[in-house]
Length: 477
Image 1: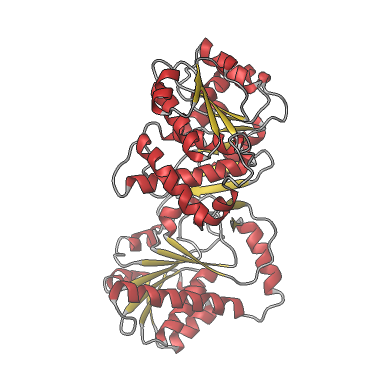
Image 2: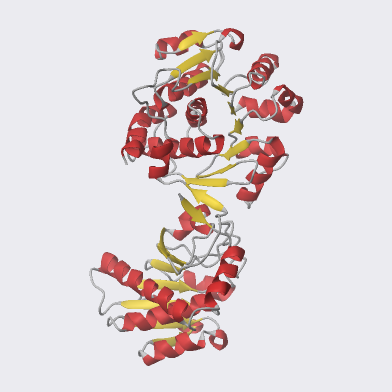
């Protein structure tokens, strides 16, 4: 599991390490790593390293110092290096001296457009972790002349380090080299960071602020049957979804649960005949009141927001088992909050809103700081909240946060959320911690979308077809 720490915590850890480290040692290590990745990118994009031209965009502070020292190291490999100083009076003195000793060129911002025209690679050392807001006009103007790949030092300049928000002009990096610890921007702003490479400086840090599951984590958590398992021990998932008007929601959510584990799925609702015809292994009935015993419920997709939908939601919330509430269920909770009174205190609840449903639940949109907003919602509803999006945020009432970055945008299709809710419900029925269940489901959901799409748009039914291969991939790791 990969961790991410806020800039304030990282700065405190850096201060402790700097107090017991020789002056300049950490910067030299960081800058050398930047130079190694710069050389690798030159080789990838131009076929050679020596004789190529690297332009450093240098601001004030340590990120500018890292860029200058990296330039000095690149000169040792016979790379032409030109530093464009955006604030010459505040350029890092030792780094600037090192580049000059290595016979690197130094110019002002007015010469930036000319030297950028011949760049094979640009290293972004404009601002660091302490900066906020978009780039200043002089720096933003230079970006218009960048056509070469960009290597960002620590983070792309102009992107907020703790939220990934882009409040103005900002760098879009091909690759980012970060040091000491990964920052929230590296997972919340993936489209700006490009490929992120980590350099360990030996910082002493406690539990991370954000986490990201890797495929091995998901594979270890996924319920795989053993020799003593049966359909009941693997988990019985109840699906309360769909209607005569929207039978597809029932088919998608039920099918997702069927394909997720080797347990048992019970469907209850008006689309029983349609579900039974598509998934003959499902035990299907017309009402939640006679569905039989389940170990978790999925409720909401396509049930409607009228009286019948409310009755279904009330029954499911009062069943005393974990619940994944999606779509119409979240709308009902927003419009009629007293429906939550049916829930037994402490019974696990997972809410899976998209941005519009989140706004209905909370009375405001998620805003720029999506992590803080989802944490607030999780505390308010005493539930795990999964905010869907290209970057999905999962928070529990205790403040733990998982982040999942989608593989492309293939999941942006009608019915995709129904597939996700079935995945979550099946994992809840198998006994996974609700926070982990939501995170694992988001991971497999995005992987299934990528597999099913195979480079072309895919429907929600297609995403269903990708679930077995997605699970197979993570379980075999």
